[in-house]
Length: 96
Image (tube, rainbow, N blue to C red; front, side, top):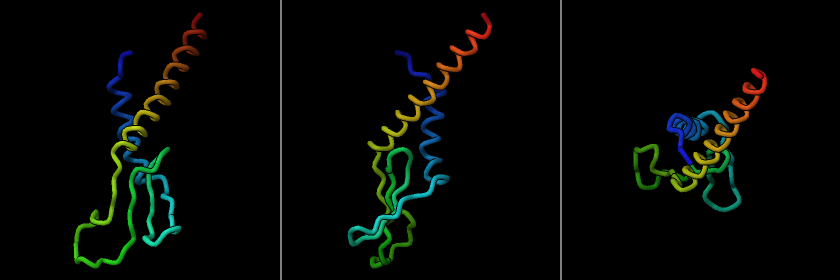
């Protein structure tokens, strides 16, 4: 099976941009209040804790799960690949 680099690149960017454009889920079931981002699976977690250590970095209370990110990229890649395949099949039948 050949991997289409353009589709893979697009799916990787869509997974990253989903963090900015799709609202996160606020979880308050356990003590550290957190917001989770990502689509279709949540791979970025922002913990809302008081700044006890005095860090000025905005990513100091974030957790990025790269394995889940790559699974998101594969899901989006498969979805785009299916859409392109169906589009090719429909345009091929309409020409005949």
